[in-house]
Image 1 (tube, rainbow, N blue to C red):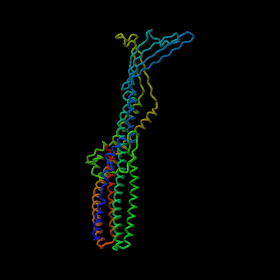
Image 2 (cartoon, rainbow, N blue to C red):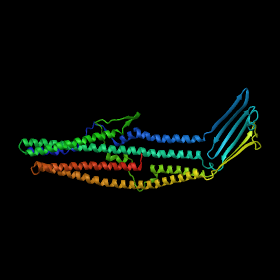
Image 3 (cartoon, rainbow, N blue to C red):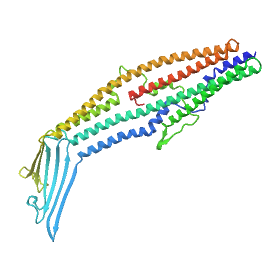
Image 4 (spheres, rainbow, N blue to C red):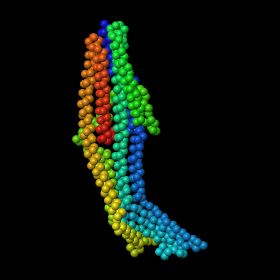
Length: 466
């Protein structure tokens, strides 16, 4: 009768591993955790500054096309004599190409005024245009800077996506490590309870004369071993919890520290594809050109193409022409005519063009460098995605095989315990079976963790924003 009671107790202890934690304990799911990371993590906020910086640079580049009002006033008076009093006010409007519209008012007086500055008493008005006929006509510094600023804004958005994605990947890996350490702790807790129940039963049987003293010693050794394993698992879980807390923040950059009752979601495997946005991924139909890294390099390449065009344009001579209509009565229609004008021509051309040719050569080298990087990145991304998808398929098969092994070892352990209490086996064999079961449970948890991390790697390599 005593053996039957002990057998029932040992069969009952096998269900301890399947016990669920207190339902009152809080559960931090993966999607909720990543939501906190994406919203409040300081590095994610820092990544947003990249876009803000690019928008500020774009605003600065547009400022090169702002209309300008210039006033130049000079007056000299000495010993009650007015040498000169000169006023020159100009309003300029830069345009997209190398053309600048200009309106001017000039008023000059004085006893020692240079004759070329002589104007009518009420001043002289002019309206005209300044044009770069060669260098700077089709492309110039202002035009290139504005186009590059627009490209830089788009590139910054792609780079921001990569930065945020990297943080979410690291956060996901940390969560999976936390989940792994928690499940390991659960395994050792359950088998510690088994060892404690077995030790108490054998100790009682020894006192009643049914078991040898050596059996109590072996049961005690197993009990202490389980305690040691549990302590190692507990401290690993504590460390992983603290690492997880590094990614949890609230508003005003306030860090969060997880409570002891907080635990990971044990059903993560059921929803991981949807959470990481890798559900239904098809490598054959995935367009590598939509990848943020490729897009970033494409924008960088286009910016360097503009830079090369600008350097090529600098090989042309500088030919600036300006023409201004003159009048002293701008309010009267028809006073601006070709009889009264002020014109000018300015030509500059370096004889050897060594600086310009050197700049063009450097621009071409930078363009080739980015092109090589684009080709290499496409191949690298494609190979990484192929490797990860094959690795995921392999882990799926390994997980199924490991689950079958765990079930088989559970059956073996139960059978060995029945034989032990029927006197047909030894405690050594029971402990060996149990050690094998623990080993395979830990392997199964570790394998699942690698599977989760591979899913996170696929999410990261795809740069797939949640």
